Image (cartoon, rainbow, N blue to C red; front, side):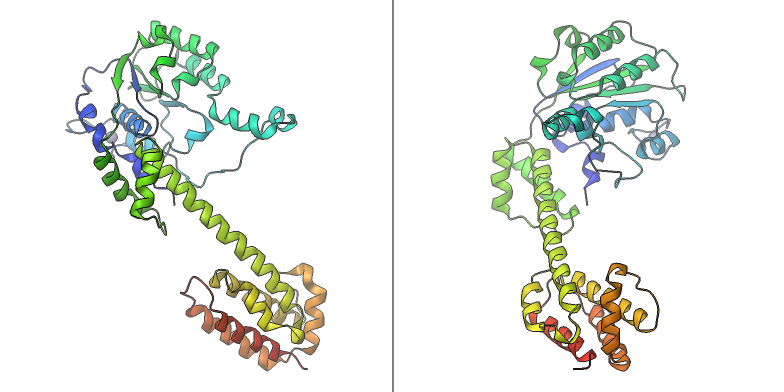
Length: 377
Ligand SMILES: [Zn+2]
């Protein structure tokens, strides 16, 4: 769902900056700065990958083929250290994109009365312990004998003790170690750090270029619908930062999905209560209440319920709804087995034609009235 591809490419408006880099004589610290949301992070990730790529005789690094590139892509390169807040960790290459997304609250945050706020704040910060241990580890040589790359973002959020540790490393740079430092606000970076880096200013695209890029990204987000005027207005709202616009669109899209799921869960609950009535189900009312939910979701609920009903009527135990055992037992007393089998076939048939995202009320009425017919009146 998340378009990881966008983080595997350098944005077209940053390409001239990329082309200006000399990989043969790369400085040991660069400070890439520019407005938030214009692709600096993706640029930095590609840069780190290129600096670690072990391919020889290639015109363009990263080669995406060598062992180092492979390690990098799976988030396992031992010589790549990223000091980024939790909010940006998911933008790094990793083997499992579905990695636990749930907020990991520390005890301190949980105990805090204002836990929500402090948790959020914590997620936006770079961990002090991580910084310390990362920088301490630099005294050991690199694992693969080549470069070692440290990416830090956002540099201006580094706490003062971490900043001092970093400064010491910049003053006496360990061998083969390259610092890629990122800042949205270069004026908030300590001048002592700034002066030890090669400064690279990341430009913002012009409006046409930004919108063109954005429109090219959208098809990779399945099911996303956004009108051109919507996109343009969000674009301007976000100060012409295409990556921020894309994130907003994705967030909005996921919110819509969440809303769909909430509707489906509530509908499925109502459906179960109705089906528990057996022959007394008010199928017209039920169809009316649930038809706005996703059809496939409702069908799955009916199918699971009927499957349990079949199991219980054969003396077995319910597989899906064990806590409704007594209801299912009660229903199985009056359920007619041939009708139950027939109904099962209708459900299987219905699932074959469930392509419509929303249930039609008529389809549901038919299915639920047929359900009623299973039971002896
Ligand atoms: Zn490579």
